Length: 126
Picture (tube, rainbow, N blue to C red):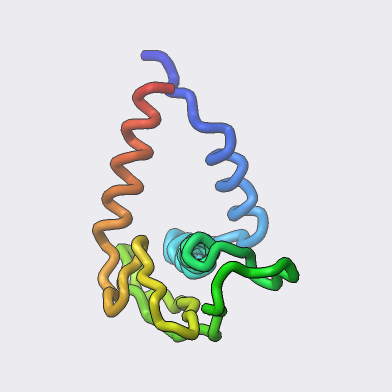
């Protein structure tokens, strides 16, 4: 049976995680992944906030809206790897409605199933 080709970006990312964390056990691998998930979710939420407000963080350009960023709120997310702390951006008008992780949502098991399903389908076509 032929060896399945892996996504080179995924391989490079996995190698970098192993290099940075040097996990001696599978439990340590899980801890490393939990460390990564928080910033990953925060980056996704920052992208949603940028789209919502129409400008990047720290932008000096004239803005089309009076609504501005207004700090962060803490959120503990329940994942397949355990609990992950994350910071959710807020806006002054309280009109920001994140779609990736909705307001008052803490259980995001479904997100991992979607990501895993996508990766499995993606690997079928490589």
